[in-house]
Length: 465
Ligand SMILES: [Ca+2]
Ligand SMILES: [Ca+2]
Figure 1: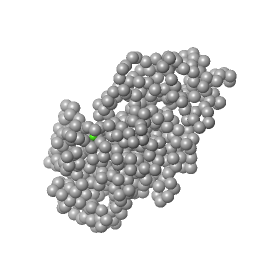
Figure 2: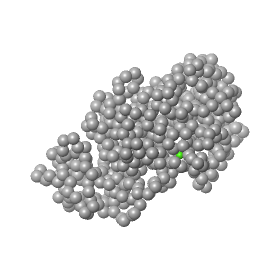
Figure 3: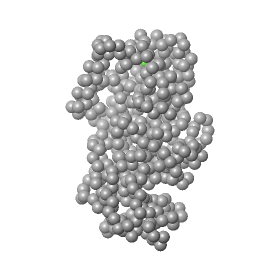
Figure 4: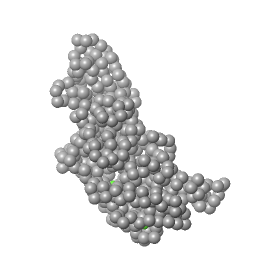
């Protein structure tokens, strides 16, 4: 699979006409102004030719330049139209309609997402239908909001879609890409300014109903367990996409027969009463989602830290469920009957593997809030059945450390929470003489995912036979 930039499917908007930057930092404002200058340069033709192979200047807003898309086709089933550029592209436009009809039906009618609102009067296309622009040579595929319009009290935004069916996310992946993109358009109806990672987390979860799992996404996510569960890495890796694994966990742990929970989460995060303040935020939305199942976001983060250990080659068949082998639905990479060579790539990365001795291990890298460390302990004598562990941390009233041990050591158990209230505890080995400690950093204040700084928190463990 082509994993070279540009990464697909950003949910960001065109710069320059937003009512307010996503967060109000000076740096962001300067960045937006610089982007505006670049944008104006493209429009005004400063510098040498900026036209990509498509003949359309990079950065063109299709809504403002219908002249590049002289042809269009309207879906007979759903309220959208597809714009295309040459008669030769008509067959592709038909394919796009077929795929978007399917995605729309599934996500709106079956999963319960809100469909994109009419953009009547918002200056995109000839009418209120949702607009899809086929742009050969654009390479990336994305949904953008139409700048300057807010349609509901909670801040619903009209949006449009750009697709390159010939680019790295077209071809065989086109149906899946369209499902992913359409989910972004649904998100715009609820809250386009939510915490950054949940956009790709949700869209990637949804797209896997339509094709192969994004194995490199899950690999990048599992390679960084020390990062916060809701960390926004600004598209440096596939981490945010791979965090869809958390939604698989929510499904299998809390909602095994309930397909509608991601759509409910998005409805929960609609802003109120001030749409310019991200409240309720993502954590509020997750807490509200989990109230009916008598849990909370913090609890889910602890349980998930244990679950993600069982992805990949450590799959024990009792955690992430098999997906039905129906239609085009495919298996996840950690499923026993999918490509075997993909399975270790979904393993959560161990911080260290330590042969038992009296030692202090400084956890490296130290975790962010909502991050975890996975440390494997191996006995060094066959008669050793357990080891002693204690934690060394700075006192900080804002956080608590949760220590778990996996796998389980008795039938039916998938692990234990280690009680360190008295300062230390003995942890039994498995019969194979191993155990992995999971150390997770949980906030004990009203954690706001928009305020994450990437700060890490030093922690050490003292091990003894
Ligand atoms: Ca329209
Ligand atoms: Ca919100």
